[in-house]
Image 1 (cartoon, helix red, strand yellow):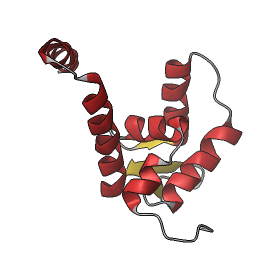
Image 2 (image 1 turned 180 degrees about the horizontal axis):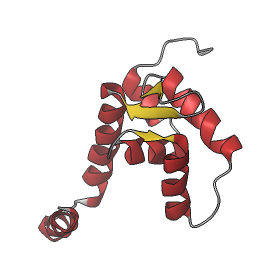
Image 3 (image 1 turned 90 degrees about the horizontal axis):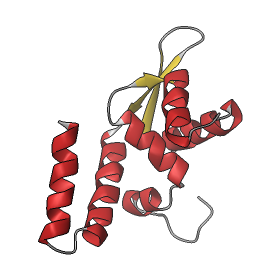
Image 4 (image 1 turned 90 degrees about the vertical axis):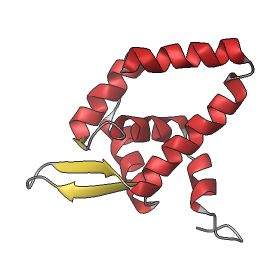
Length: 118
């Protein structure tokens, strides 16, 4: 990094773009290959996600240590969340929840959302 001081993992995670955070969230479900990640993002965004946007962001997440890249075959790479990537996802959730859950009613709304996912 070209900054005067080295960023901690938490600081680096908090500096990710929303697109990169969405990739981490998708990978928190299970390891996936690039086109599967692309499909999930397209479903979320409701439109096409260009390869030229996806793969440089995946490469950066690998460089930062949030994602591990492995070869499935000669043409297909698999991407998997690292422990640091999982910590980044949970850090973001914890921060968001600290802003959203302001009283017991909101806490109950969040519990309902979680229960609907189970």
